[in-house]
Image (cartoon, rainbow, N blue to C red):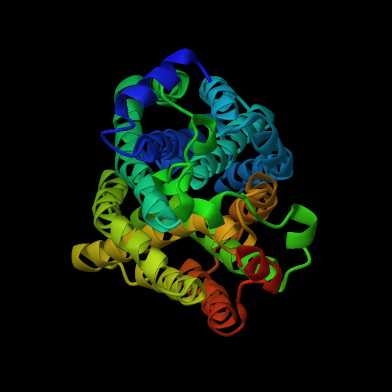
Length: 425
């Protein structure tokens, strides 16, 4: 930790809880991860396909291969976060994400495209999101849901701005220079706050999560950081229900992000700029709903909230298949925004909630590996349907059965492990 970080903490500790500064940094991290997110790729897919003479299926295959490769590195990244702290990992991640953007802009064939996708998915959608959620998780306990919900506002703003800005940059500077600009922006947006403001955990400055002082007798039950290790977590039924359920969200929501512009323009005759613009009402509904979702998580039983989130994912998939005009398109965009609001709030919340804070980096890294695998293959059925002339609308509707079944599992079978309950006593 640099001296300037500690000085800023000392200057502000009596005015407000420093954890809210960390929430701001985490939100910036989630926003910056937009360079590696599917909604940013969406405006680029048709242009790259035409310029490089590569089919949608080939581009999706490059995306899938790269994302799969990145996914299997995430458990290692989670262990590095536990070992070195999220701040240091975030700095290196942002530097490499910017380089990945520039590699993407230089891609001229399938192989280079796959390598570039690998950089962006691992350092953007994978490592940057993991570390941003981790650093906030360390600073909050009772208000963790609300704090992580606020973090999700960064993703909401990214979803609204990155596709629109990308479309503007493509139109005015070409898709290659657009990626160079995106790469430079990741450094400018993220690095200053990490270098000068970020602190790994409250214990580094002699306080506890939620701002409790170490010498406060009321904090007696909070003095020990507890939690299952990865080996113990992998023996819990809850881990596999969570992995199965969030795999459905990761795969199918990614598919919607990736192909939203293509679906709405090719199947419903919407202009590509209008289709990209629908990310804006999605962003607005996310901004409105994310703080609500965080409050709900802190107040109600988590397994029921996860089940509701999965039902909203089902509704998102079904609603895009009825986006035949502007009214139905906006309804879809709003539902999709609520869906993303729930999922982003849950993203960092579920792992410490069900397995504790002590080894959350390694557990989250393994869990996120599974989710990123889902993200890597989720778009492929949609791409195959389009390229082979199958009914894409039917494919999307059938895929909605997966999160619907997952909701059933969460409502009736997802519960906290007895071992974690005993640790809390």
